[in-house]
Length: 499
Ligand SMILES: Cc1cc2nc3c(=O)[nH]c(=O)nc-3n(C[C@H](O)[C@H](O)[C@H](O)COP(=O)(O)OP(=O)(O)OC[C@H]3O[C@@H](n4cnc5c(N)ncnc54)[C@H](O)[C@@H]3O)c2cc1C
Image (tube, rainbow, N blue to C red; front, side, top):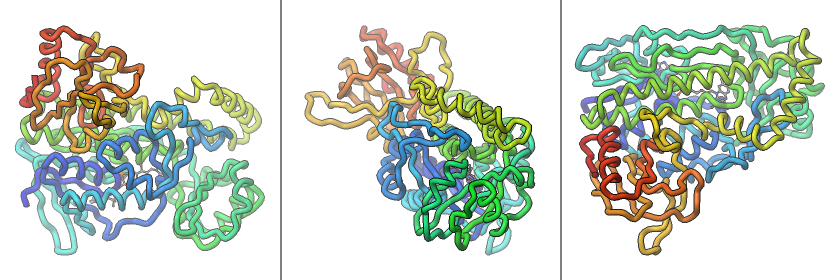
């Protein structure tokens, strides 16, 4: 098989990107240096926007069946009140507790179904690019081989080889604080609540395992490179909450820190970066894996359109423009969140930092504050700046999953069902003359099954394959509508002229 895109890294970002490319018919190959998928819990949850992404591809059911939903998530462990996701405008107003290993297994299953080869035990060890493509030397069980591709996507984690080989800088701030994490067999959960009250993150996983994350003031300056022992874990738990919570044999122990970095660019020529290869931060608020999934969704269709000659000029560069901006906001937010965790553990601020946290707990109880922070953490509020001034306010925002009624009132569907095959959707709500369906754009004529404030008086919406609105209008006059629509299609999906 000739490879059009080589994805380096079979973590969540690499697997989803490969699936998105395969869905668009791009010949994709994934390599990962690990011989086996890992079994660590690591990222523990999918936030509402990530569940929506899975819903857009018809996969939400699989993910929801594999995990457990909770009504919100902590902004930081130092605050007593979690953010309430039930207040969010989504069909999935909850966080889904699912160990990263399960998330990866589900994405790998999807990749298999789409026929993507995932080569494990294969490490990219050198990388070159030229005008016509890129090539990587990959060392695997059968020796060293050169893989040529039109593009290489570096989804190879925080220490990304691809990023370094492409000479892309990774500026940011070094580690100053660390925490310890462990997955344990626990027979008796009587002390869990007590641990939580003392700021320990406790989460029950599948197979009888429980995850603990502890920040012991006496140990938060220990560098993340120093291994964690079971004895240290027990001592720190006792130190922080007066009990070792009955932890038994650990499945996984690790120490992680707050190194915060953002790649200076997400694209250099034929090399692209996604996930932790592009951004790392303290995993406060559980945003890392989720952001990587959103990177992959943003990049997949743009790269596919570029390879198929259907991309308007500069489309691939909008990947950097949109996602780097999101990465900057993310790393800024997590730095602020980390400070809120660190201050109460720091002798000089302990008492006053406690008062600050009390104040913030009160503020989070206010619906508007909760709505703002939950909107950011869940990524439901991620919006890309509209290219044109005067664009409809929905432009760049996520399209809500509204119920729809087909003409004649016979069948009721919901919008995300039309995104399953990863094409643009032109949704005609005004009942005007239908546009033609074409390979890259699906045309849907329907009326909203319920009023949605952001769609008031909207007659047509063009929605990107990643579920963000490319164009929306309230125009009703047929001739103007046709002109506007043709302009939008030419701007986003030329060659698919459904005008
Ligand atoms: C303790 C902890 C808790 C966390 N909790 C959360 C959470 O609750 N929510 C959340 O969203 N995030 C969380 N995160 C962050 C999350 O784990 C990462 O953001 C996520 O794993 C990044 O996914 P990725 O696909 O970008 O990279 P990775 O998962 O790091 O995958 C990269 C892959 O690339 C492979 N690779 C590396 N180099 C090469 C090479 N040269 N050739 C071939 N393959 C290579 C690796 O083997 C690996 O499989 C947590 C992290 C930690 C440490």
